[in-house]
Amino acid sequence: MSVCVGVAEVVAPEFTVKQNKLRRNLLAVPVGNSVKLDCSADGNPRPAVKWYKDRKLFKERKGDRKLYLSQWTTVLVLKDLIPSDTGTYMCNVSNSYGWINHTYLVDVHERARAEPVLLPMENVTVYRGENASLTCKALSDSKPHFQWLRWFPMHSNASTNSSTNGSIGRPHYEIVDKDETDQHVISSSPSGKKFEFHGVKLTLVNVTKKDEGKYTCIVGNAFGYAVEHAYIIIEQSATHSCNLHGSKCSFTTEEYYNGSTLSPETEHISYLTGYELEFEYDALVIFSSRDSDWVNKTLIPTLEKKHGFKCCVHYRDFVLGVPYRENMVNSVYKSRKTIAVVSKNFFISNYCGSEMEYALHRLMERRDDSVVVIKLDDVERAKLPKELQKRSYIDYPNNAEKNHWERKLVNCLTIPNYPLPIST
Image 1 (cartoon, rainbow, N blue to C red):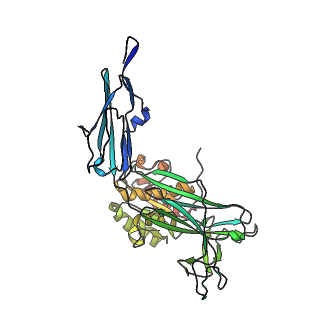
Image 2: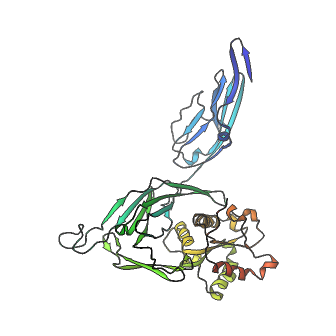
Image 3: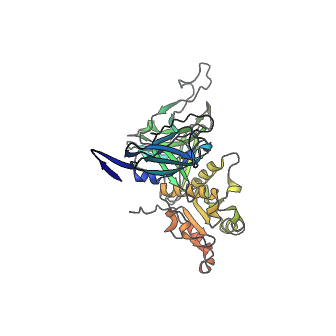
């Protein structure tokens, strides 16, 4: 509303904040971060502002933390958030010709205190003169720091790092600059939660035999660090020694860690079957503990005892002493397929949601047909992540399919992980 009085125009308050910002009124923020609540507005006379928290006039924060508010404070900034800052914040903006208000809901949650989890890096084989790239990706709740190392073989009596008495000195390495193209991907889980993948790529241009060797990616955050290794192998000519149909490729190098030689002349082997790498497991099985009876008595015996597949099951195959999340990530990448036994129980389990997130990230990253869905009850298709909603699945409770689920599943596990078509 506006009224002309003489020369001056009087105007009731109006928000100047963009509407899309006002619509984002639910703010979930980790402990220690800051949040900005914007109620910027214009009016004549200049509008005054009052802030309320949980319907009470907002005057102070717990813990004797300073709060600077005046009648003109249209943007409220809260720093170093703690859980007690959670609440409903309302701004009331008014002048003598009208008033407006807006409400923000702030949810301060505990930051997950976890070190980064690294996805396995893949060895790279290129020909001399080509470019070679290694990609290092990490799951971290806070932005991590990446560092690349390049290792050099140590030869007896020839290394500049050897001490004068002939003992082995420190390993010979150099710090390598990473590309400036950082990747930061936020993926949504079926439960609506978000997790963050960070990544960097190391690219060597016009490689020679001298570039061959072991490279290490070190990723750290405030709570710890993680390390992954990969090898760049340089072929001298375009004659490849690998037969992609069932043979194996090997190369020889020396490994060093913490000043000691781990395995001189160690053979590092990756097996190739058809056109894909052979994995440690045929399938990782993810399921709700409430469905474990069917999984343990029907699914696992059928696959392992009857058909000879090797399955990865969390309670049996996860590595002791390794954080559960790291076990999940490693298992997804060590398994050729991921079998998701989905049900109503599946979608109320936090663990199932996280496991599905990692499986979908691999599917989208490699664009391989690696996720197999078994629908165990009448859970709606719409509950599935959107990446899987248009894909076929095994409908176990369907009477027409009940006699064929085993044959279909065996066929799925036998078919190689061919790349998925890119949708346009």
